[in-house]
Image 1 (cartoon, rainbow over the protein chains, first blue to last red):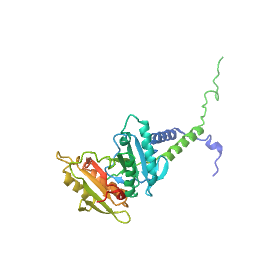
Image 2 (image 1 turned 60 degrees about the horizontal axis):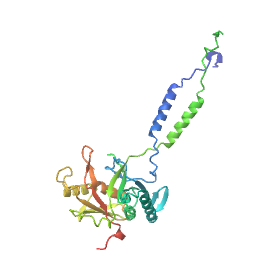
Image 3 (image 1 turned 180 degrees about the horizontal axis):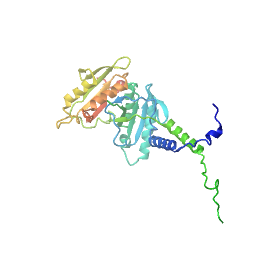
Length: 150
Length: 166
């Protein structure tokens, strides 16, 4: 059957309003859930689970994030450093803190090392990294784990 | 001057071209969808561990530390847990052992705040087992889902090559 254009007249007008409403709602949702603050989180690290892991109540004091991969490489300040090379980096970090806070002699001991180690990393490597931090003067450690839901 | 209203003049609707706006909106959508990261909630264990040399001058603890040791298979899996010389089958047993030493953590005579635990483990053990033991030592969730804190003073044994000779 053949339709002539005369039979249907002008093409029907599409109402865009519901689609635009929905799209703006989606944009609003994505904007609110967007987070730029997790720059220290590397996706190579698969954290171990813990039922006690819960977000901290307050922000860590002078935080320094070290991430240990399962291969034993430390991700620190955007670079990959072998475990043996961390000693020099942490000493520099401690010196920097002391220079920045000349009035506070306990600034290095008061700083917090946030340790994000992979679940499959070797415990011995984690312990060695902590020892290197201790040798540089750091005393406060935060072991990070993934919240486990039961 | 008089404006004459004629059919096909000012009364006709002016169609708005929605295409550029929809283009932009979809581009924004694509950007937000691609940058969306589903981040799992992360939690912390706070541990204060001064270097052994700096803690020598500190006052000695009133209670001897409980030595917990984790042993691993060649693949790094957990093979045994010891609290002192006592073999334990699982993390739950470790928690029960700690509670049996320090008492009910919610009770008035609990030693959980004073008691120290030194955690030792084989070098090749997977870190997830270390965190499992740290979880068992530092607390548990009760039937209401509330966190009940246990040991606060937790330290790791020094690395093997640096451990003092006995």
